[in-house]
Amino acid sequence: MLITFEGIDGCGKTTQINLLKEALSNAGHDPLLTKQPGGTELGAKIRGLLLDRSNEAMCPQTELLLYMADRMQHLEDVIKPALAADRLVLCDRYHDATLAYQGGGRGLDLSWLKPLESQIIAPTKTFVFQISPEVSKQRVLARSQSGGEAICRLEAEEKAFFERTNQAYLALAQAEPSRFVVIDAELPIQEIHEMLRQEVLDLIAS
Image (cartoon, rainbow, N blue to C red; front, side, top):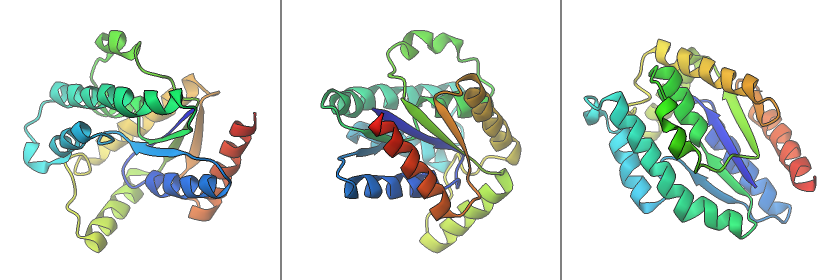
């Protein structure tokens, strides 16, 4: 089973996916936690290229292809073997991120990706964390200041970019209501966690 977590930067999805992994492990399950981009050795190098602010001249089409390259490698090296071994896979961002960020945020025509998309395994469930660009920016800045991490190339985008990305995520959720669960990312952390934990445990039981 493949469960994916989506949302713009600062939405709290990484905190929640880690809390869920711990809760599932404590409940006797053996989930695999991974991410895109960067879930493989090669992917980590691609992630570095994508997030480095010195690469601001990168054109949108190059960005798109780098994300897809990371995804195809990640599928072969991590996701397919784990699913073949009947493991539960929790993935921090997946193909919906490309549809939302590059399709919605960048406004790219993604129709030519169809041949590649036919090779992508569809998630069983996708949690989309919705947060306003204003709160997202506040959280990203606070994280940068407290952790000493520089704001990356994508995090530095303008407000309108994240508004378009949010809208694209909502459109995806509306198109596939049986797969997507939209979450108010501004709710208390523990409240979100309990909701996710119960949702996934029910999914496993079914």
